[in-house]
Length: 273
Image (cartoon, rainbow, N blue to C red; front, side):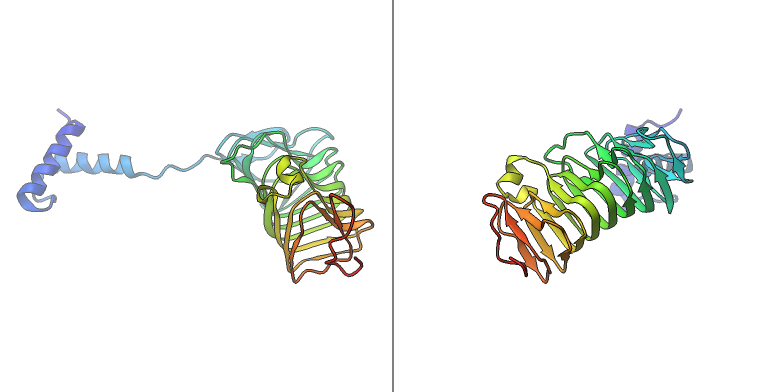
């Protein structure tokens, strides 16, 4: 009769009390094999599901990882790939033409890769964030020539090595952002924060904290966000480089024109203020 779990635990406990250890020489072979099998089952690591993404309209389920295996060219207004909560899309050096939909407030889009040709936003989520959400992660992406925006996320955003060009807005509705090596150019507004009390009052929950941001040749650079920039460059923007609700924190950052959200006056921190 096969040993039950309680019997296996009893055998192991008896071995330890009698011999100070439990080895093949002490336990009967059948019991050793059964105990080893039980331990293997209980200690085997659990890995998230991985799937290939090869066609327009695919869903990467919650918690899974999708691997883009080829370029996708999808009809305008048609979601190329939809990510569930906690899902990851690995672009694998491929390109997507059309919008990427995120039905999540915590998921990842990881390059290298290229996204273009969306009529709405290239990366778009309608999921409302919760306080414990880590936010949307985008890394190693070239996002260009889209309609409304490159990234539309009503929550937190973490970026690394992301280039954005030629859409009406660059990053829209963000509420808190951090990262490095971000470039935004040739948009009407480079980065626009969500009009929440945290953003309007300049609270830390809405802070845009970036290293090596380049925001050039936009209509306006950054709108409505509390701001902390380091080693960054904002210039050639038509109206202002940033309009903020609280004094910006700038370290080794070049800018030309700043504005206060409350009065429209300057913060006296840029060269043409």
